[in-house]
Image (cartoon, rainbow, N blue to C red; front, side, top):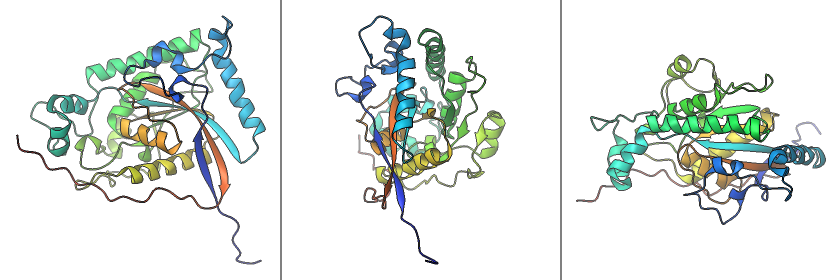
Length: 313
């Protein structure tokens, strides 16, 4: 019938558990070292050769999942990496979280440290180099597949972390490191100047090989000096991000370089247990996306939060 609309569908996201140690309740995120535990990938058997074939077996199981579950279900493996230590992390540790949130995060500098669009420290660069060395070792010792797609937050600490981690790796010709800068992959937004991004021109100048999505504006039009983005809004935009990627990127193996708050939001969206990442750490998650008839009902929208008042000393 002319003018009649078809049914509405949305993607329902969930975590496929059972493959990674981080899916379980036991591992402590504060002490978990992904480089000592093969990214957390569990054994498929007790055979000695399982150590060297584990990723190949996982790759085969992932391929089978995508082959047998029908056209309305898709699986992707996402490696969610937090940036290395930034100047803002040092400042927060120096002043304490309360003073950071009510005062220092609203400024750009204390006269010694500067954290607007915070850059990596030497420790942060070393953490990204550690990730680089581990990926390189994984490709050789574990025969682990490389990511097919790379995405990064537009904030400098993530752009640099991705560059140090991946740019010098010996990657397959069909899987080059050509990251796409995604505005929606940024950190919880507002108030903190460390989370106000630099201009598109800055990104293009300093990271000329990166692909910048067309919708990214020249200047940061999303950051607010008055309010901090609530979790409900963060989760909603990260859902939009996943919708965009699952709709437009047919690859299966993906790397996201992002932030503690944004990664926490992604884990909420896909129903993964909380797993706060240390700076420079990575968590793999196997994500199932199922097309479901109906309308997605998100969390009730919260209001943005102004900066807290500082308590008197």
